[in-house]
Length: 206
Image (cartoon, rainbow, N blue to C red; front, side, top):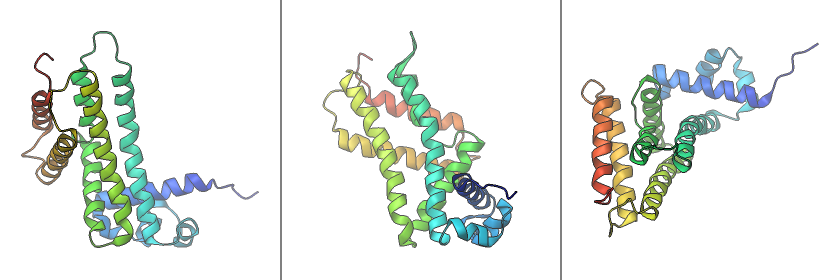
């Protein structure tokens, strides 16, 4: 009896293979042939689920975003329903820190994210997804600031649009520096810079 293949599982396995190849050898080496070999499949099998390299890259970008978003949701749930005595500022810092390369897993994801964004500059078909990734980060930051303002924990008179861009740019910049210079910009410094910025945004009484 032939083995029944779950198309969703197979596509997921191929996307995982893309990310492994790209992390190990660079995005430019994530060809259909190399990805098929990494996934233990024939090239024809990969083509059965993805029309071409561009569709495969876009799906892999979505998978990368899904991984990050899954961890962010855990922190968001803790922030929306905090445990008794929880430090809300630490919960906010923990939520935003999930976008930073604080350990090996997040460092690899950050490097992949930067690779995809860089590739999108010269590959128009990737640009909409790269824009969605950036919009997702911006929306996360905006929601954190809006909720902080609503609860009276944000300094009065701030322009939320400007502060959203400023904090989003800080996270992007920290990510870039930590990926490029991991020996110079470590996890403790990343956390310290993020907390200092959040402290500067807080209402005096907080």
